[in-house]
Image (cartoon, rainbow, N blue to C red):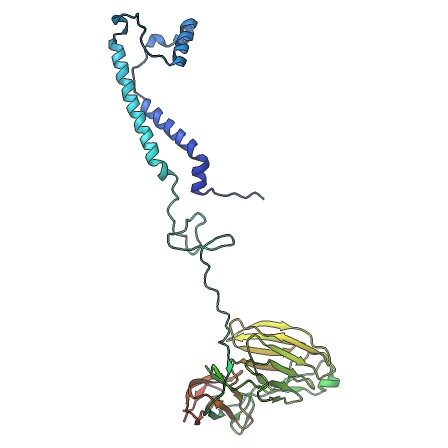
Length: 408
């Protein structure tokens, strides 16, 4: 396929400038010569055919020699200008003047002729392909120079550091639920009933007992330093549980460890951190197929889709692009569904079956407290923790709308 390129103004000037100036001068000269000098007599129309060859040769020799002086023996009458010669000299002088004007025009316009054309406004939102860069702007491309645009934000939170917490405070609360409780979803067992069972498997997405809501993730936002991370493990058997070992993570979140057993990944909700792993240790002798999605609003994007062999291990790196929620499903067993919320510090908790939660060793200061449930949504509350003090934050979720109870 042939490609066509448009020469830049400077290249055009370098290679075609001389030709352009010559042509421009000749065109102007022809225009100015019209009507200049004396008209030729009509009887000289065929002079070229009747001219004496000897005279023409002598004239040519004189022209080449460039000798315009009058011979010493020439008489005054021979050199005296005639009336026709005076008229001819006037025409020649006028022609020289005009040619000088042509040269001046060519010299004056030389820089302007080859200047870059002014920038044209693009049509709509599509930049014109012939547009020149505006002064003071930067254009980038695969081969362009200039200052590159700022790098896109990666979404990584500032690094958390472990530090001694003097006179740390405590946040406690209770999460309740009002309204109609969503019934569990039933799934028929179509694969590996020898492990998953033959009866329908139930998925309880909203777990409520006596008006108290379980599985809510409570996160304290904006803590830059404090206590070390705990390990975070979710595991079967049904209905799934969580485990943690204090201080095993240090400065960095150690990743989320998932141990499927009897065809369940573990507790319905968990946490995950940017740049860490979802690690699987399959306690079942049958294959599972973890499929993860990054979720933001109603949009979800597939992140991983790999097989986890029976009694096998698997590590899936987590890199958020826009959201802060991960959903985990098993393509082999659709009732295996779990949700994970992103954390940037170790100050988080989960509401128990009685709706209570506790976050301890909180450095004194003001923070934002987030309560999130994958089905019921998210709520936030401003909190202020005093040195050695306690803060109570109660949240209330409902089937129809989200409500928040005043803190105290």
